[in-house]
Length: 394
Image (cartoon, rainbow, N blue to C red):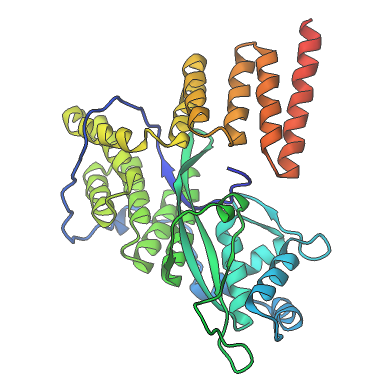
């Protein structure tokens, strides 16, 4: 996807595909029991979890900006454009993207880096200060994974919906005039379904992201505190429960991991990540016959998703099974030939196989597809490297 701005980080262990004729899989509903293990994750150092106030808090400089640029009689649409221009224009803040920047509004504003989640938090905080009628939306994008070291992360997407305020001078006569603030051009131009979420759910997503970061860093006490806070903030947020199950699995708490996975699935039957992790847990315990129908069901659901095949390609590439990776990437491209990341992956495989001309051709396609200047420059540098390598070999 073009310049994918990440939110809602979900941890996904390595996943193996399997062929399937299975059509359904039903997981038993977990009874409401205590799913926390406070005594198992005690930190020697104090842990501070950001409060809602700290996450959205503005300082004097940020409030002054709102007064100057957003407190006026302009329409909500024009205010939204003004806000975006201020955030991204080189003469103002000039924010840059960092997928790991799960930070507060103030930290984004002054540090000038953000990911999708923190950008949304900042934009909401500024718009709210300006009195704009604004709400959070979760966009139902296809499952999409990125690799972080030896792990895969499943991403989601959120944006903001701004409605025109009704007043004496500007009354909406027919329908609701709205403006979306979205930081991903790919998502913005697609007609993915979306739904309004509460501020509490957005906060739970933020804590979930922080917990996922801590999981990757193997800081289990910190991960536990963030994931617990996510589930307390929004008790029905399935993804945070799923990540808590991963933490328990990593800590050898297999019985509790299974219970938490099951609870996550009971909250959201479409939480394929928790289903995958449950199957992995069952396989770890030698319960192959229980895991198989889950794996079959997941594969059947995901088989038409190009990013699923790209994920399998990434796993094969990571294990140095380059021919298998090539097949998976080609399948992803067959399903969607407009994603530059797929062609970059293809180029990497060809390079590892010593097929420099094929690698160059794949990189050229990636360059043609990407619309982001920084990414295009990176790809051109890779292409020049390949040309140099070809010259050396000849």
